[in-house]
Amino acid sequence: MVKMKSQKTRNREIEREIFRLVNKERKKRGLKELQSEPYLIQAARRHSQDMIKRHYFSHEGKGGFKNKD
Image 1 (cartoon, helix red, strand yellow):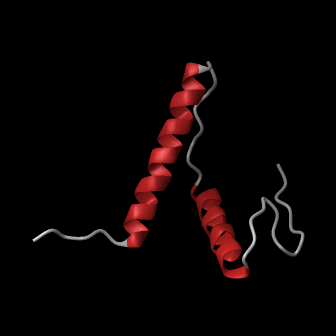
Image 2 (spheres, helix red, strand yellow):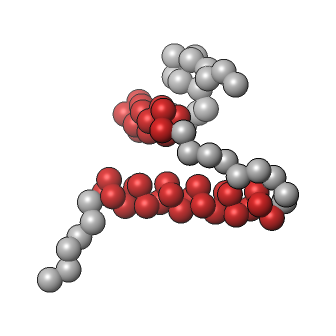
């Protein structure tokens, strides 16, 4: 019997693969690799869920909230 992965597990695998590929490209270009920051990962996940729930796509929150560098 094949055990099916949960959607959450598949999403985490996709996140890790994207992160790996971004760092691979950065390395090719002589740039420093990005470091994983757990609090930023959680913020990005919450923002993604908010965009799904409220039907929009933006780097800013629907209420105009902007992340600062």
